Image (cartoon, rainbow, N blue to C red):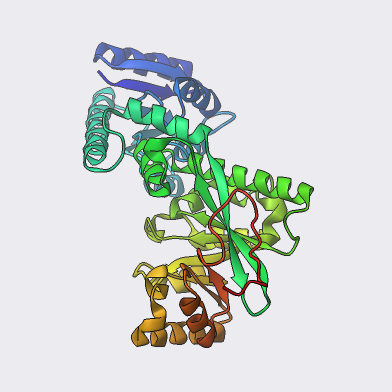
Length: 393
């Protein structure tokens, strides 16, 4: 039978509802406020809370129900929430819907209706878990149950490190920026797409993003102490759209905020930007802190007009599918020339990815593309490698 977390500060209500739910066969844990509830979930394991449904009052002391919901969603996107309230409000109802609540009930709550909603939410949660297992079975991720995937993901998270690949300005013969690329030592999740997919299956994308950004910040601090990173060199950091829902991203105390002026968040549409809460507000806050924004993979088909209008990027990455073999493809040359020209007219800096040959480099230079990235200059490395520009390949 389903395990329920009941968050209710009124003792009589909590006792009454927990008695009814236990009588119906549910296992029930009770917390008096959101902070206590979060502690209970964390003891059971972040990302795998052990609860099937959360029933929470909205108006709670210390940490209210809405704040509690928002914090839970940073590490678990799937667990169903049922809100109860004695003071219904359209604003909280809309916010709850935006965060995917399973029910909004006005006090005094009808016990049988509550039981019915919990059963339905629990069944939907179980179905979602089965869907995750089916996706696991058809993917390249480790087979087995979610518990085994959790162990594998923990191993990857514990061995995570960051590689850096230079982005060069060929005409200035210098490193313009580095792109930070996540790596780990867990063989089953060694490739970034596999790691990201595992985080998605486990509802731990926000946690993974925070861990990566923390590792990047530490690597930059170490390089600055060692004098191996120029002060004016930018760092490109990849973000999935779901990372934009993380409230920590826009906080002054977040790991990258102290160096925001040199950080460019590179946004990839692996997930739809439609799922980002208050995208414009988030972008405004990031830019006020000093961060800049780039669109990744231009030319791969993901970044449409709507993406440009909403993000207003400072940089765009021209996808390697356009760059590979460009010296022999006149049509690609025309497309890239037009892209570079249009970007410049919009005061957007284009960066060509995946440059591997001298012929590709020289063709891009003839098309006025100066910022280049690829194996021709350096492979990703833990060190901030500086290419030998005196050697012109």
